[in-house]
Length: 148
Image (cartoon, rainbow, N blue to C red; front, side, top):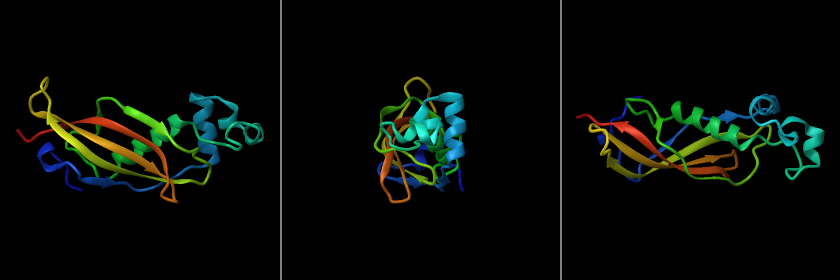
């Protein structure tokens, strides 16, 4: 895959990723360290929860999304450097066995005023399950190096 400079990217361009399969153990391991709530840690306790079963933390979904992005088609020459997250939304729980992938679409490109030679590439990032249903969506400004 060829590394991309800011000038190589266009508004409307879309980038995809490979997939990631979520396991019950990965849900429990992540939750045990970062989001220790019963619906992320224990099937029996999760059955009586809002989620009615074991569900991944939304933050785990965000981390999986990051992993998929940095190993996907969008490969800026300087790496995938985020400058924040806008409008983060989770639409449905991620369950053991779900296979996730990401689609990212370029919404805006502009030069950075504070750092000449770099620009902001604003992208809508959608994490989808194997049925093509969105489980998470956010918009993020990414810092991308220009050729100049």
